[in-house]
Image (cartoon, rainbow, N blue to C red):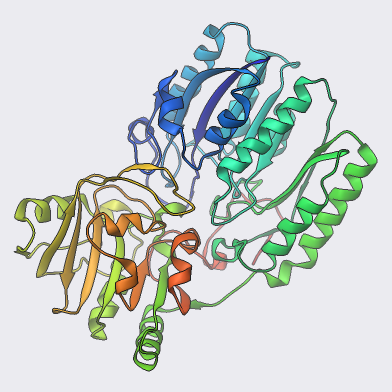
Length: 497
């Protein structure tokens, strides 16, 4: 029985967003728990689709688990240096004071950037390796969008990454990490392989529900064997302007020849798929017109408009109003949109109460990092239809078991008796779970058009409702067409798809 220290420290950093992840951001809960230390973290993550819970489930009967620290924050701009230093210091001291440990398991994202560090996880792993020495196994679970660096590879004993997007396998990834760590604890000597690919893949086209990602994931799974313990294609997070941004192939195994063959086969398959990573982005006016045409033609039809550029899961503020204005301009009916983040509006609607009509502007605040040139705030009147405290449990495959805390939430309607219902929260969170809507009395299946501030994760819980799904390029910082962005730190020769 090994004594294993367990911690999580996660942030996906969109360096093109002006917002900051401060220490207070990590303290505050959202879909996932806020900052936790010691045994309380085990209770908080129990039954949640997170890698840390999957690892705990897999390891608790065979090992002594030592809870250290959990910290996560919603994707946004860079992590402040003081936030990173404070949490890294806390983790270091907890490891120092935990007594003898045989191994570390870490739940990391893999795309953390701070004000002065391009490679947050690499620096964290370097410090932890210095603390525990060269012999101790350090195994980490990584997000599907990790930007893996040479420093990360050097200081970790092994990585496993999610294999689904939407990320429905986070807990399963933690269980895979336990298998890898067990091999290391049993004395297996595992070689490492790491290859980066020379292009960036836009987020909407990384979904594993379609090709080419579906086939590439299946290939990676088929390449594993007793000699190749684990191999992953990790598409990376393209909205990070750092030197090592982008996709990579990583593998660990006991047979150097078998490792080389497997990595070469997977790398060649990814390179051959380069031209297939793409799709269609629609302007708001075109998307709304298409949705209205479809729903008028098909009596029971339903269309989802993915407001991908304002996806909070990629650093968006969750408050742009371009699509809302367009829906009103085209007199759309039977629409539900969300989740718009506006704490001031939610407070005003909560004070007014159900049945009240309020004339308060909604969304569009530049102070909340809306993109320049975005639509102005949406003006009322709004009828208040539903209220909630923002505390509920996720029921969809992605947020399954998450004890969400989004602050006061409301559902309001504008544009007439059959017009646009809008779900508003006080804390941003991408619309990837129907429970967010049901919390304020909206059943997504009752509407003809759904507008969701998400890029891909919504598909896990909403896709079955829709005849069609359109990616909409409105304002926001979660840009899908990477050629619109100005990269200054990216290594030479990388192609923007």
